Length: 112
Length: 114
Image (tube, rainbow over all chains, first blue to last red; front, top):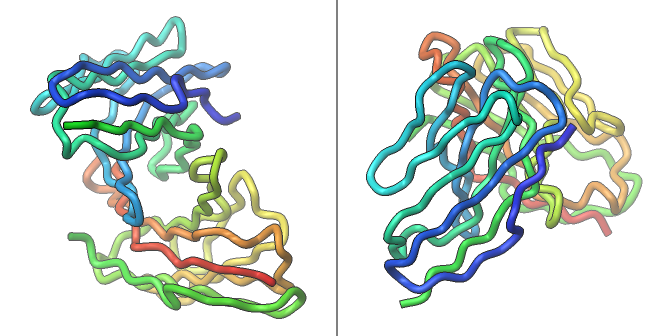
């Protein structure tokens, strides 16, 4: 079943912070975050595993609450380059195949 | 960049005609995937492959078939295209040895069924 993302869209000014949420009705083994710029392919941001630590690189980080089956992506001091659509994806159990089920996406627009 | 190429990149066809999309990788990865992307639905898994001649269904496999006769090639076939199959199709690969679960996507194939 597809995870639910919120909000569906957000508009920020450069330098502002944003949080994108992802929730699932099923128990999760891992949560994956991708960003897609208009007209391009999705690009991997990070993976969070059950029992793992909060991840992050640069000013983008994420958390994974296993009990609530939720993950949040945090974008701090947003830059113009952060614009795009963010997708969370989930795997209910361990698998060597990345049969990721994606949410419908959150469109992030950054204004100067 | 991961070596994934999709062909054709754009195709317009008519309802009822067969269509085959090709995904070619140069990374020698075991796993390959076909996703479709539609507004409001995100990316939905159609089929995936875990080796030569080994394939399995994803979320939205009805109306699609796949084949993998070589490690590097994964074909997606629409036997009789319908307008509901108008979409952008992405091929992806993953490296089972890297243990990150990361998907590397191709540039996409835009299919329009009239």
